[in-house]
Image (cartoon, rainbow over the protein chains, first blue to last red):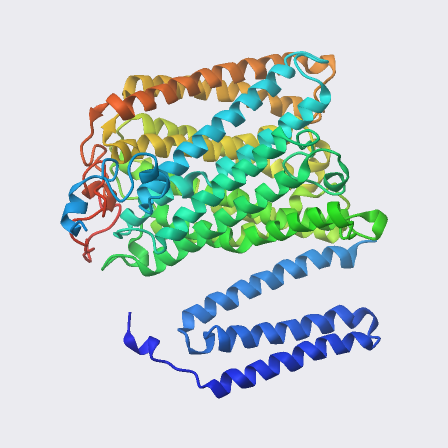
Length: 96
Length: 537
């Protein structure tokens, strides 16, 4: 295992910025429930959750600094998850 | 502290570590000992499941009540299913042979996370105990079937929560094993062991590990939701509260159909090791088998809806699930062609593992082809929830995974225990078992086609003769099982010492002594450019 990988240090400033972003997004996802969005309520909540997950995976879990194949594997997992969700809800879309 | 060479001098069965006796086993982080712990645990649960199955077939010997009431029958098939699926076939080959052999086959000393590996076994035991608690305490054994379908699973008065929680914990065991294997295969391959030089059993474990890691959490969360539904009435699956019971079926099968591939992929991997060894010939289409393995692992995620054709899904959903089901049959068929082509013009050495392997192909083909009947929308409506389905999945799950498990057990037995079994008794056991299997499950195809529903303790008189043959088959099969087990237990203790490579295999486990040393290899193996797991020519 290369030493170089372990020596990568992310500045505290980056972590603090991400933390603030996550807090803002959390409060926003709570706040948006007070607005009547109808059928888009769930979509709005999911968009906030996706952005937050992306930030956590990219910065806190160091995906940004990892090898490409690790990023590809994680991307593949999320793509699969998305496909499963879409297939499930297509059933609801077409149900009479 | 003992030196590495002193540790490696002893074999893993006799090595005396920090703890003695039983503690030396249940606290061991040696992947081989953990594999054996799984073997003994799974064999115990398998025997329990067989006894329950035997009782069910006895009940069906004649119409009406034979030995048990309807409610007892419901509980019996539920417990039989939960034990056989969650405690036997899902952990089955990965937990036993994956643990014992995968690190050796890639030239490693152990798995990436040995302590996590031991934790997986402990979680398995905890899950088993929770499910067994559901049987022994509370208001009667669960009676929902192993699928825990909503809304009945949160309305029945039987003791569901421990069983649900037990299945949840068993899922964690599976996830941790999958994670461990993924990291091990990625990070601990010996020098020169490229991806294109990995034995196929390892490749199938790799595909399986992905499914374990990604699909199992779905069923875990679903079971938690059922528990919340039971305790708090949250209304996710309860139509009376605006919930959707079909959503439960979606979520359940999003895991449980890929789980079929958790069961069958390592089985295919074991067969892919046995066929070349006993044909003394390079496996035909090595890369095609790898591609089909990964294709099964991927497409297998997307076909779950074929369990729900009659549940009330929308028409378009039924169409694409049917289409994808037909597509997933293709990579499975590719493997069968590869195995047959490997045998063609091979120098075939007919031994017990080979008998198991070719009977695996036979029953797996019947199971697979009958699966197409169920994957097709029109025919599925006719045979859904009949004995035909029971016959189909026993041909696949038992005939597939079960036969491959016995094939693997007879193949790697001399390596694992350092002793050879009595081959004449082993062959007799296989023959009796195989005949019993065919007699037990084949009539159920006919009974199902004629309209006999599954999960009923009673049936019409016209189904009597088929059920008599089926019950008789269960007695023959269990006789074969007893012969096999007695022979193996006796041989593990008193069998003739086994050579390092009794079958003339080419994978790394055959290069080390039988039983293997504690640290597997004296020196780290190096795979040369011209080396390969199936280089027989």
